[in-house]
Image 1 (cartoon, rainbow, N blue to C red):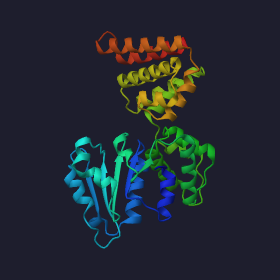
Image 2 (image 1 turned 45 degrees about the vertical axis):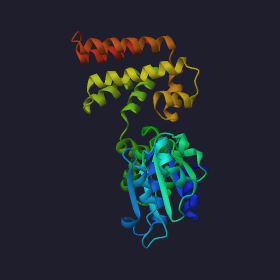
Image 3 (image 1 turned 30 degrees about the vertical axis):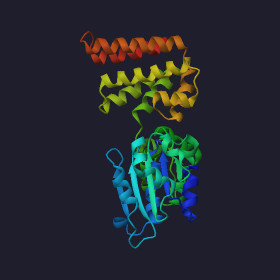
Image 4 (image 1 turned 180 degrees about the vertical axis):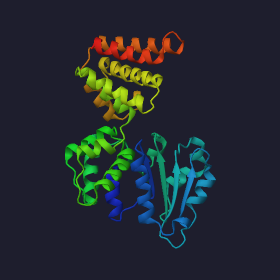
Length: 324
């Protein structure tokens, strides 16, 4: 059985639990919150009835020993294993038999960022999908969290926070907590507070700069880079970041792969691919190719001492802006 995170949460709060949970996906916020919720709802005396094991160094005997330990002053005992990808030998040493007939008083929680098909073969394993949230899910969470804390925010401002954080729930949680503390109970989170307080991801700033270039807002594009330099971003890293961004836009512009396939190739969330697809349409593929080649050449020349790094950065930007 596979559940979305919200389904898992609702079932657990309603008193429904399962002997084996496999939290699977890249969204650490959902994984960590899910683990904490299981501890809170199912375990008394966590110091005695909760064990966390390292999946990379784990032996079958260690795992079974923990799973077969009887809970003390608690209905359930929870064993957590992170990044656990057992091989065939691990299953043959006894784990297979446990999966086929797990103990009712023991809960096994597996937290994996990657899929592991061998674990999915057993009906006792309940998969909790912890894939990266899309923008709409992030917006819903932000609005719900603000409402819970007595703070007002509309959909557009919630969307702005999600955009600045690139739909990363771990970052969104911290930024929303900061904003709620700033405006206080009964207050309203507006765009001024968001722009003043929310830390924007470096990748977002490069995206913003590119958006300005595409829309011929050159002075705004330059102001983004100037701001990043003032805040200590090294010019060499900026050139590399801009190169990676335009290379991604080029690949997306000429690819016939799906959003999900591209997300897997680039190892980024689907939300970021969707935003890149929108941006790639603003450039001709030929212009993207020239930008990638030119950035690669300037990076090489600056590293080999043929050009000053600061001069190279501004030359790169000038060339991209005039090629658009």
